[in-house]
Each structure stands twice: as C-alpha cells, then as structure tokens.
Image (cartoon, rainbow, N blue to C red; front, side, top):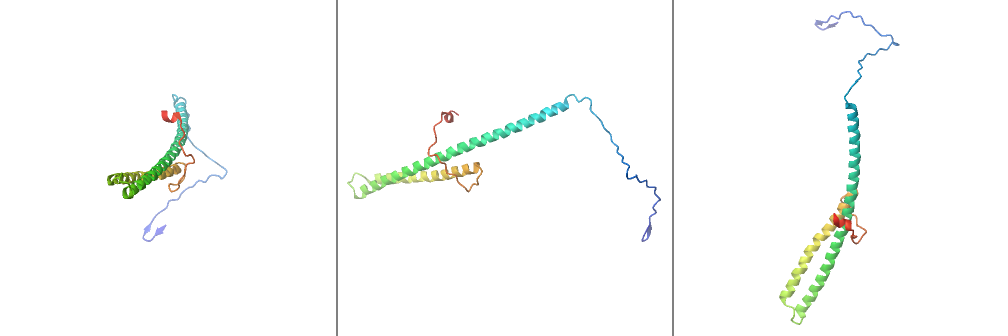
Length: 171
C-alpha cells in the first residue's frame, strides 16, 4: 500500500473462517459451596426492607387521612370564629350607633369619653375580624391542597360546628 511518500508493508495473513454451522462458547463457571448464610441473610434483609416500605406507605396513608381530618375541622373552626367575629362586630357597631345618637342628641348620660371608648373598641374588633377572614381563607386553601387540589382553589366545609369527641381532647 502506498500513501504519497510513505510505504506501509502489509504482511500476508492466514485468516481461518469458521464453518457457518459451527458454534463455540467458552466460559468459567464457579459455584459457591459454602457462603456462611450470606445469601439467606440477604434474602431476609430484602424481605425486611419490603415490609418496612409497606409499613411506611401505610403510615403515610394514615398521616394523610389525619391531616385531612385536622385541616377540615380547622377550616370549620376558622369559619365559626369568623362568623363569631362578624356577629360581634355587628353588635358593637349597633352599640356605637346607639352611643353616638345618645351623645349627640341625648340626655347627657353619655359623655364624649364614653363615645370615644366605644369607637376604639369597635375599631379594635374590626382589626381582629380582618385576620379571622384571612385565616378562614388560608384554612380552606390548605385543606384543598392537602386533598390534591391547587392552592388557588378553595374548599368550603359542609359542617357548621366541630363535633365533640373525647378522643380529640385526650391526645
């Protein structure tokens, strides 16, 4: 063979071809006669790992169920608290209206200090009700997310009250 300025001599080769019907295999096989219980130990270890994974899956299911129940009743409680805050605010605003009318047109039994005290109390109740509304929305969104919906969706609980269960109080 010649490539430009260099020559590469290629020696003659004797290539033996197999008959297409002939097959050949070669290998080294070893068989362990005594392993000291290693294989049985590996089997038991693998079986134990499968049992542990099954128990972990079951525990995860129980934790999910517990979380859904707790968040559901948390959403019910948040709804109750917001409703109680709204009722309290409505009553305090009615009290403010009565106090204001008695102060401005009244009999002199209501002083300006009484009127201002009631105004401060109504504003305080208003500032308490706003986080209650936010907490209700957060509880419903957390419940929706826990049951597999998106954070943007909201779930409104059907129950109006948290049922009394002695087991809930004990632990």
